[in-house]
Each structure stands twice: as structure tokens, then as C-alpha cells.
Image (cartoon, one colour):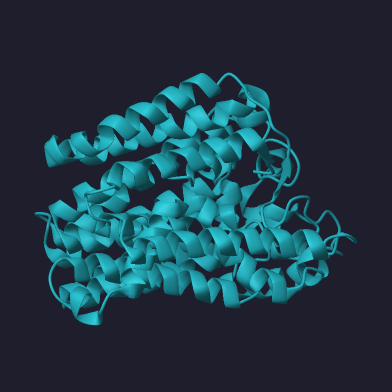
Length: 438
């Protein structure tokens, strides 16, 4: 392990410890509105039916994932990553049991599923959606519904109307789509940085500590849509597919959907722009715009104006605990808590990147990988400075966090299995020592 790796991992661990200590010290009067800051969770050591499966799967992944990623034909690597990621997410979710760890998380409290029964006519829902965002409004929406554009809730309305209603089906949908983000990230990395780096990144993208939250929240669905939008754009920009225009159009369709799933994920345009700059082409842009337009026109014509919804949400946010939580703490704790989603190996990779000379990354295929990771960091930091996410960012920022994981490809071969073991051990500890809110 080089000094730069140690610096990144050690700094991450120290900062997380500092956030926990400071959080505990200032939270005596519950000013943070959290039980175990900086994580939205409570301390409760436990085990469950998923424990033996998760442990065995972690051992198998640590022992064999690196070798499989080197030898397997590329066409099967994204498929294998999707399947392995899905297995990893399910195993971790079931540590809390089928009811508490899966079905209950998406069907209770402030989630989307309980609000589905309120929605009859979709046209009326869209026309009056913004009216029900403020806390003082009659029949105001629950926190998650109010906190996102209407497509987030309509996702679960559609599932319900095709016979897949309730928390269990919602969980299956979110896990299945969320796990596909691993495949999308690898497709994008290969397009801009080459097959070798994509292969090196694959085990770390699969064995992501983010799996703890990918299994229990709709943000997994948002992460998948964002990841595939960037991946399709990368394929179109680099000409890695037979019909680049079709890939660009697909990127636009997904980008348009993303706008109406989560306001903050418009920031994924930053890594998207980086892809175009890397490829030195703007040719996909008209097709992207063409894919986005139907969503904008459709939602606007139906009665929902994106900017009204966003500005009304800001008012709602400061009416609730978002207005009470101190900015000074969360502006750094939000970032530090990402250690639990990206892991110490990613922190080590970022440390290596930070300690390296600029000339080391300026040329070659690594430049593409660094651009993806770097612009994702920029998007995450802009989201942080906005003050619109105080706490719970281990879940909310999943669509940004998945783009930090490929930096592990920059770690040297020597010691890579130990770093992968550290990645696998972290979510096992989180899910056995804490009960996360999501």
C-alpha cells in the first residue's frame, strides 16, 4: 500500500469518526433530528436470515471477482456485474429480515407506496401536484412525494395499476433496476477509458457498500436511470455502437425522465458534459435534446411546471427539519458519510488521485476515468453546498456515489484483494450494527 492510498483511506476514517463525535456532542437536544449522526440510523447490533448468505457471498466475491473480471469475455461482464450486484443487495437487505429489511421500508412512513391510494385521476394529480407540496397545504404530500417531481410517485402508481402494488413489488423493482447501475457504470467507463480499466473497476463497482441503501429506497431506481443516461451518451459520443444517434436519443429519453424523478439529479449533466468533451464531439446533443423534449412538453401540458415544483419544494424544505438542521455541520458531514456508500477502497483511490502529479493523469485512457469520477465529485459538491440535503445523503446521493466507485481501478494490483475485502466488510458491519432508516 503506497502512502497516497493510506492517506486517502486514513483521512476518510478520521473524518467519519470526527463527524460521529461532533454529531453526538451537538445532538443532546436533538438539533440534528438524528439518532446516530452522521448516519440516518440507530445503533442496534443484530443478525438475520440474510447473514449467512451475505457472508458467504462476500467471501466468494473477494476470492474470485478479480479473476473473473480479468478473464471473462467483455460482453458478459456487465451482465455478470448486474447479477452479482443484485445478489449482493438482496443478501444485505435480508440481514434485517424479509419484512423489516424489504417490504416495510418502501411501504411505510413517508415513502411513495402509501400515497398511491390517494391518486385516482393522473391528470388531476399532475395539475394539483404543486398545490399539495407546502406543509401548510390541506392534504399535503408526505416528505418523499413532496420532495420529488411527480414521475417518482407515478413510478409506483404504474406498478400498482399493472398488478405489482405494495412494498414487496416496489422493493423488487428498485433492487432490480438499482443493481443495473453497476452494469451502466462499467459500460460508460469502457467507452471513455477502455476495457482494461473497466475490468479493473468491475469488482469494486459490484461489491459496493452503497448496496446497503440500493436495496431499500427509490433512489436506487433514480441511480439506475441516471447511470444508463450517462452510459448511453458515452456510447453515442465515442461511436462505440452501430447507431450512435439512437444511443443519444435513448440518453435524452432517460435524462428527461430523470428530470421528473428528482430535481437535484439535473446535476448529472456535469458528467454528461464531460463525456462529450472527452469525445471532442457535440453531435449527440441534438438527439439528447429531442429525447428530453417530450417529457418537458408532456408534463407541462398536463399541468406540472418543473420550476414551480422546485421553488415550492424549497419553501417546504425550510418549513420542516431542513430549516432546523444546522448547515455548518451537514455541509461537511454530508460528504463524510459517503465513506459508508463508497468505502475505504474508493477513498484510497481518491487519495491516490489527489496525491499524484497532474501529468500522471493528463494523458491516456486514465484521463477518461478521472473525468467521470472528477465531474461526479463536482456534482456532489454542488448538491452539498446548495444546503438542500441535510442528512440522509447516504441514500439521496446514490446517483452520484456510483460514479466514484470506478476510481478503484487506479489502485495497484498488489493489495487489490485486501481493498476489495475492506469494501465487502464495511456494508456487513453497517447492516449488522445499525438499523438504517432506509
